Structures are given as C-alpha cells and as structure tokens.
Amino acid sequence: MTRIKPLRRDRNHHGIQVVVGTCCFLALVLPGWGQTSACAQLAAQHFAATSLTSVRSVPAGPWAASGRGPRRGPAPLLPAFCRVVGVVAPHVGFELWMPQQGWNGRLLSLGSGGFGGTINDGQLAAMMMKGYAVTANDTGHTGQSYDWMHDPGERRAWGHSATHDVTGPAKAIVRAFYAQAPAYSYFDGCSTGGAQAMEEAEFYPSDYDGIVAGSPGMNYSGLMMSFLWGLKAATDHEALSPQKLHLLHQAVMDHCDAADGVKDGLLENPLACDFHPEQLLCTSTDTSSCLTAAEVQTAELIYQGPRNPRTGAQIYPGFTPGSEAAGESSGGRSFGGWGLIQGPLARQYAIPLLKNMVFGQDWDWKSFDFDSGYARVESAVHADIDATNPDLRAFQAHGGKLIMTQGWGDQFNAQTYPVEYHDEVVSLFAASEGEPEAVHTVNGFFRLFMVPGMGHCGGGVGPSEMDALGAVRAWVETKQAPDRLVAEKVSLPGGGAATPISRPMCPYPEIARWTGKGSTNEADNFVCAMPGGAGQHR
Picture 1 (cartoon, rainbow, N blue to C red):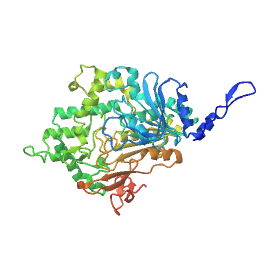
Picture 2 (spheres, rainbow, N blue to C red):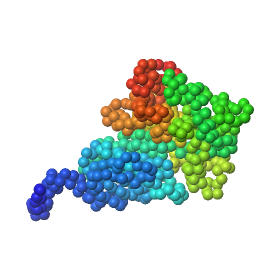
Picture 3 (spheres, rainbow, N blue to C red):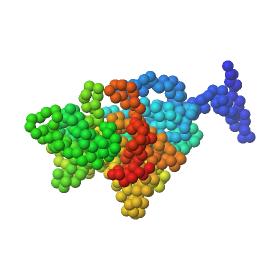
Picture 4 (cartoon, helix red, strand yellow):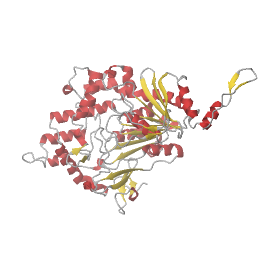
C-alpha cells in the first residue's frame, strides 16, 4: 500500500505558508483524485445567475435511470463522473454530467420533449458514456401540471430561452472543472428538442458549433392548429379506424411505391404520389375494402392540413401520402400513422396549451375558428413558442453547421414543414445572391435529410437508426460535409431470421435511387439523385 506523506508547508519569500505538491502527488497515487477534488471545489465557486443545489462525485458503477418507461437490458456501467445539479435564474433547472476521465473535449446539450418539466438522466448517461460533458434542462418548470403556462416567464423559457440560459453557465462549469473550455459545443434534440435546436440556430447563433434538429416542432402554434384540425376532421365527419387506415395506406403503396424503382413499402418522394382517397369510395354499402364518403372527407382534410376558411391560406402543412399507417404489428393491427392526429394529439397538447395560454378554461375547442381564432393564437404566443425565422445568416457567420432530420412517416408533425422552412432559408439568401448561388451557400451550413418510413424521432417501417450527431461533428471539425447519412434497421420479416437493412438518407431535395445492382437492403447499392430522373447528383 502506498503511504501518503504528511503535507509539507514551505514559506515563500513573503513569509506566507503554502502547500507544495500535494494535489499533484495525490493525483499520481490515486487515479481520478484530481478530478474528484475539482468536482468538490465547484460548490464553492460562483457562476453568473446560477445556483448549484448539488455537486457530487459519482463513483464508477451501474446507473439505473429514473426515466419513465420500460428499461431495456441491464443498467449501464458508467465511469466516475461529476454530477452538477443547479438552477439558472430565475427558474431553469439543469444537470451537467462530466466524466472524470476520458473527456472528449466537447460539451453536448440535449433537448427536451413535449411540455418538458423533466430531465432524462438516461440520455445523459448514454451520451456521457461516449465521452461528452453533457447537460440537459427542465425547460423552466418541473412536473406535468399546466400551471407554468400561466406565467409569461416560464412559458417563454419552455418555448424559447431555457437552453440558451443554461448554455453559458454550463460552459463556465466545464471550464472550471477541466481547467479548459470545451473545444466544441453541440446541441442534439428531437421534437420539442428539435424546436429548441432551431431557437438556438435562429436566435442564439453563437451558442453551438453544430446542431442536430430532429422532427422539429419549431412552428408550435401552427402544429397545435394541425392537431386541432385532425380532431375536428374526425369529429365532424368520420374517424378512420386502424383497419381503414391500413386499407388507405396499402392503396397508396400499391399506387406509388414502385415509382422510386424499388417496391419495398417505402416512398422516397411522397410529394410525387398522386393518389386520391376517393378512389376507395364505397359504391354501395360500407365494407372493409372501401371508404365511406365521410371517411374520404376525413382523409382529404388530413392530407390538406389546416387552412383559413375565409382566405384559403394554408396555416400548416397536411400529412403526406404514405404516412397513413406506419406499420403493422404481429396481430395485424396498425400502429403509428394517423391514429394520433385524429384526436389524441389535440387532447394531450393543443387543447391544454390553447386553454392555458390563450383562451381560458371555459374555451370549447368545437367552436374554434381557423381565421380569427388562429390570428389570436399567433398574437398571443408566436413570439414565445415558435422558431420559424429563416434568417440563419448569423449562424452561418459563426461557422455553425445544422443537420435537420424529418421522417416521412412522422405521426406527430406534418412532414413537409421542414421542407418549407428549408426553401424559405434558400429564398432569403437568394434575395441577395441569386437562386443557384443561394442553394450552394445554404448547402454549405444547413442540410435537411428526409427519411422514408421513419416515424417521430425514429422508429417506423424504414431504416431510421443514424448518427446525425457524428455527422455534424465531422462537418464542424474536419469540414467533411454530409453527402449522405446511412440509416440502419434490423427487420424480422414474418418472425424469421433478422435481416439487416441499410439505406442512404440523402440531403433534400435528393432522394435515394437503387443502382439496379446488388441487394436493396444495402446502402452501398444506392445513389443520391435529384427526383424526377434529373440525373445522379452524388
């Protein structure tokens, strides 16, 4: 056993006693001691507008995440780390986990989901195991009640500023702990986290070097209109049952699937699909193989999306062909798809938000008018909860890189809003430099990847496991622009042996095309090309 010598106190030439060499000696004989000591010292330090409520060194060992939902597999074995819990004034709670050894020199901030109110320690654990100093916040409130929606400050924190509020203190704490600033800072979020990503890119462009915005709920007020529109369509006409959704989906696939050269249950370019639901209209009595007139009307309204009844203006996009039923379970029941947009999303999100932020508790959603009502919503909450500003010039000037991903099978978000936003960004740059040059400029810092068959933030019938964070890191740090993202999935057709599937995800507006050679289950046998037979691009 190593014997630790007593502290030696020397006097400098001013006669003041100083401790010589102790920390360095202990760091040599006790691996990790230096960082453990640095963690303890954080509690005594001051960080602007920040109160640290807990600072402790967590020894290496298994971590049982406190997040809701079933745990898959054994608890992960985490390295020793410094766990910081705090509040940034006036009310944004956060956690910051810093590995005591093996830090990769980077700060990673993670997005939230839904109405926030919690911190997902399972995600923190997963990303810290990859070497990041990683942080997440509660979006400015805790718990799942709606009381925070009545407080303008807490509402704005959730919809606009919480991530930015935490970013500066997190960087300062990392610098204090490691005695060096992070070399790079990244943000990765999906859904509400994707909206937070876009708030950062649009309004706080110097916070992060690279940003991943997945399935972004960035136009939250418009998204609430979409949820309400779907509920009204199903209520005013006739809801489509899981069986009818599967019928509709299969008809779309039969009509459009092979257009991309591969009949595989995926639409590479749903915008080119010209299917119309009245093709399934029952000619006599209702059967399982046709749609009633009321069901056709519901389908048409969901494809159409919310519109102003007076002007006809599109408020938010509709759902695209191929998103009707995301898949089929072993029991033959549909899952995903339009089941949520016909009511559950409105009841879980739109109605609570509109009652608590805009109209009051006595409001009846059935009386909502998509003309004057939407104008009132925009006036009340747009500035606080939307991230729809296409002016990304400051983010570009900062040198930032942005990857946005969106599933064509998303069961929450209308799939084409990211496409519309991307086009608006190009148009903004084109106003000063012309269309071809603007496309090149935007492609140099912002790329959108539309993912066939992917649901909300992953899942769905198509390959959807991809490393967008790794791609944006390579783009930032080595200038390696992502010409494709490879998505993977393990399929179990008919309950048989697992079949690995990989496909390239192409930067919009390109789509993946099979070369005609090799297996369609392998990404290497596809190229990214412009739609409509315009020729191979990459």
